[in-house]
Length: 464
Image 1: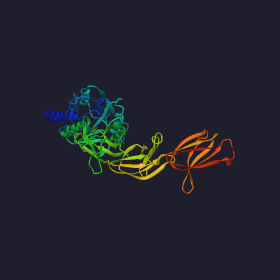
Image 2: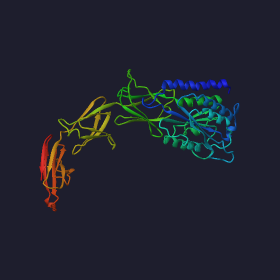
Image 3: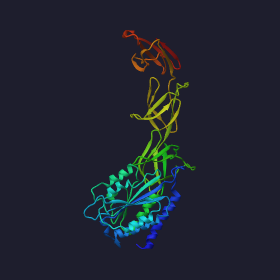
Image 4: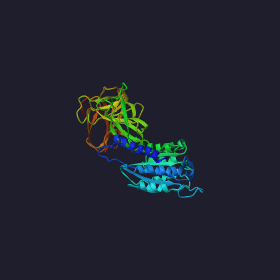
């Protein structure tokens, strides 16, 4: 490729970077510094790179193109480079599956050194891609505010019987590096590298430069997206809800946002890093989730979820603290054991529309099934005003409280503290029986019991 043709594409890389970066790239929060972009280039110097590729060998063409592109990145702020090479130390055959080395570590302004090293390489050995990816985990020094990126340049597939997909997954799951880029030289290896990372085919020299341009654009720029939270009519009017973008592979939090509508009433436009595959969780009650979301640099993405909501008010008429404030309600989806929320009596909470089961933790608990939450309405559930039981005994003992139903059957409600002589309980209105025996009387026949009716707001004293 002529110098003028290279600079046509090389200039495009820089223009794309600066233009997109100025328009789109934003820190996650005002207080956070911009992350340092650390790009590790894993370069193929195996024996197969001696093969001819258009005007010259794959090695000679790719060396010049990669070195020139690295030179063009030297002036880009907030970027550090490193170079790992495989297949350059041991002659093939025999097969040396440990022939991989970090030849230029991360450092400021080391682009010229990397270019010089690349220009001096001579292809010799094997293609240990999985081993090189695993070793790359050691190439990134600890850093709190870094985006770790890998660009793998190869003209072949794994030769050492290992799995590059597993090696890549390890890097991503541990949060060591983001999903790698792979540029395949000479032929299409997408079938072999699709599970490793983002694959770019470079069938000829111009495709190689275009692929590198696309890689740099995605690696160094943010892109835009909107989250549409749909009301009952399918309009994106629901807002003011927390939402979290997680990295799909590692599960780590990438962004936390509180959803907003702009002044025109449209969902706010977000700036996202296209290097991640995202899992989106919208923290409604219950939560909404979208998995494996892909965003592309330079493309606007839109994601929609049905999020119509209504309110629930569990009301205890006439209740005064601490009766109401200390009465929690457990809310579950029908048929499920997971708790959607713990809501307190006389508080109003918002939920996705649908039916829920309530367990109101009065004593004894009150269970209500299929309580319906409707769009933009308040569903009110009334709980009877509690009464008060004051339990006293002259000496410590063993006792329990039972609720008595209409058929005379008893259900255990509470066991009194053996070492206490008095306790006060807040109970739902109903019929009860207290059974007690002194700890100093060893005969079962010494058991005493008292039944009583407790009315709303009333106080009953039971003494032994």
